[in-house]
View 1 (tube, one colour):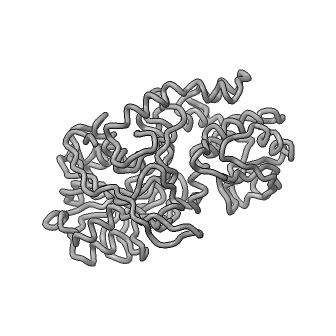
View 2 (cartoon, helix red, strand yellow):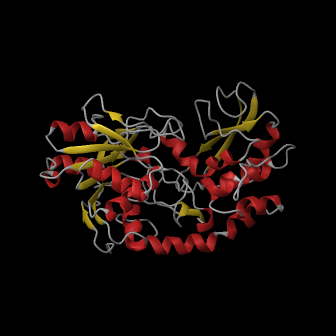
View 3 (cartoon, one colour):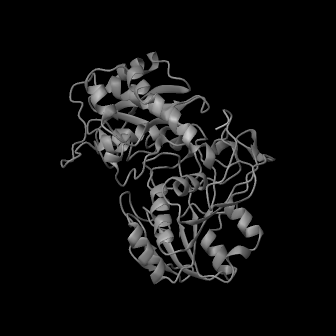
Length: 415
């Protein structure tokens, strides 16, 4: 395996079997946190550490990384939370104000939407010399935790700090799909030119960020043991902690890279305000025909159940919506983005379909989510699902090759 320049990698990628899960024998995976704890935090001793983390950084007993490090006497200068805050109490689109953590008494800083300059200042205020990152990502470019990773890495590089990533599995596997971000559409839901479903762990992304854009960062990745790109969250014994309020289950994560695009449509609920966000979709103006038309697309690994729901908050609050529940029958072949394109294609056949328009230079929010205007303009022009998906296939393939030097774990296709 080729390593990014200047990056140290610790850990290996075997695949021993673990305890039973869901009627199958689960694969035993040791996360970066597990491995660092087994070493009794030796490589963090003697330095003031800053921890960029949230509620997902737990071991099998659901003990948090910060709590364990603090109890073991590791000197922590500050905790830095992403969107939703360190303990996960803030809503979508918000961080948590600077505070003191009730359990440990440590200072907590808000890192959500912080620039590299902000991060450098926050790290300096906390007296940090080593930064530790541990968060569960869900594998989609518009999930903001990976941009907290990027921006905090840039801030650490500016201050000459050591940056240690404790790796975790990608819950939706190692496959790549979707369009690459057009730099003209960079935003808080996509900072740099990566593909929509990137198929990498945060450790691999950190190596990619270092190799492509942040060569000065002093990066170390503590790699998982036991994970590979053909495994999904339900295949492993790593505990699932919902990384944000509307990401309750691993099944949500499977569909999210596609159905999150519906946040860019005012006439279509993405299921927020229900018990199945992103798995349920619909609107008051839809009917059973949407489900039937979607089933006719014969999308690999996807099943559609006719569904009726009433969101408690968000779009169409307390209104009866007709739509579908998206069920993933085979995650190995399921393409969430192709599936979402088909859903948008069929939803446009109903009166009142409308894209969310926020005004300004790039008014359509779906363009920021998709990483460009192509998805929207092609659908508006009447392009087929195959035409839309085919339009970005060459760049998807090129990105898959581009990421290979930074991968830490095997893929069925070799990368």
